[in-house]
Amino acid sequence: MNSKYQWRRIETSADQLLEQFCLDHKIPLSLMPLLQSKGITVDTAETFLYGGMDRLHSPLLMKNMEKAVERLVQAIEEEERILFYGDYDVDGVSAVSMYIRFFKDVYPHYVYYLPDRYVEGYGLSELGVQFAKEHGCGLIVTFDCGTTAVKEVEMAQHMGIDVIICDHHQVTGDIPEAYALLNPKQAGCTYPFKELSGAGVGYKLLQAFCDYMEVPEDHLYEQLDLLVLSIACDIVPMKGENRILAREGLRQLRSTTKEGLIGLLKRVGKFQQSISISDLVFKIGPRLNAAGRMANATLSVSLLVTDEQQEVSDILIELEWLNQQRKVEQEAVEQEVFTLLKTAPDTRVFYNKNWHAAVLGIVASRCAEKVQEPVVLLTQKEEVIIGSARSANQINLYNILQTCEGTLQQFGGHAQAAGLQLAADHREVFEQCFMASLSIERVHQTDRLTAQSLLLDLELHLDEITLELYELLEVLRPWGPEHKQAVFFSRGLTVSGEVRILKERYMKFTVRQKGRLHRFEAVSYQANPDVLSFLKSGREFDMAYSIQAYHYGPHRYFQLKVKDIRSTERVG
Image (cartoon, rainbow, N blue to C red; front, side, top):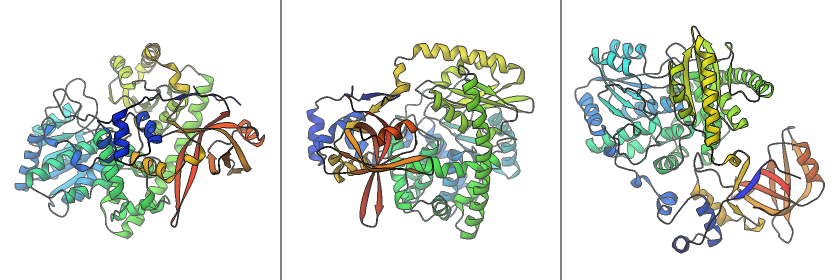
């Protein structure tokens, strides 16, 4: 049976220093190629595998940090009212919730605000600044937005309100004359790690605040269960400080006492002890985002900051209803766009004035994954066109949109995701410009096989799937962008027993390997008729898979999650 993928094993070589590191840390030498395939060297291994909070960079390395923390301290000492302003997605929601949780027992003079996606759009808004004025605020602190808010910051200044911006988006064009702009991507910022989430930048400000005020950071560590939501759901690279903060955040989340988080985990059927980054992305994130997509994100903040069980219960019911409404809208748009992809296979910009703007990003992401290229989905909002764009296959979406800047009223985002707005009569010229730029980008791609390549980290015999391997995988977690889940492969497998079809959507079967004692359950989430027929034929096959573990009491149970199956042959 043929595969649609080209299987490519990641090349490794002898490394005596890394070998000694493995010996010192009791890592089996047979697993050293797995470390190498993940780009881990002897210089980075200690921090990557075991680095804790003490490995974080000093927040004062970030441009304008000292100025920002002094202004925050001044506001607190003079009992100014502070507005915490966050964008309406999980990044902004978790940041605002983190600040409320941090300050609510020690400093009551604050309010918070999240803009309405449809009335105000993305970022710091004039209505938000007016809200700050009406509530007597002398300081606004923004999260996950503000880098492009030139007009709004100027408006705040005229009202006598200072603005501290905590953002992580690309910096292009004019920047606002805020009291302090914290963004590691801005010119002149020497902060060593550039890929923090918006809430991550906010966390660095709180870290500097704790240092300045000589506050024990234990209280700040308690908020890592909120920060990890932003790291996971904003799809930032799982490396450097993000990796440390996510790992510690998961640890905090597994023992959280926050009623809203506990309720969310129960709602999605997850035990705290087993929560993963993938669960946050695919189960928790959509529910928190449903408020901002279908109503107002303030609802999600209320869930994360309350300690009242009845309030948690009421909000969860409302969020679940909003999420169901989101699913209905998403499925309708997704079905239509997938049909358009078939009828116009060379087109990557799609428009329908009736599409619900709240689901365009999700659908664009799935479409981009399907075609392995950027996809833009557009809809109409009064007299303007708004849309979401997502990319895949390492094509830089932001660079493409920059070439189309003359056709757009505004856009923002990063290499893999962006939002945009344009005049209705510019839609066709934008589409032409986008497709022309994408064509150039295709030519510049150095490895066009990537779209159909399956990268393999390590070959295993089935009896090498052991507790030692699992423990190393646990150290390598959390997985995420730029640190993908390890993919293994085994040759010469056959099916033992029956192949079961469950819910008409996926297959379960047990695999064995000639000459080996161990057998493992495998699950494939695609019940492909050709694969099913091949498995039932009894012929040998090679299988690429990731390893999952489940706990039943004191026992650990391994399951192989199938990535691909093909007839047994030599792996290149």
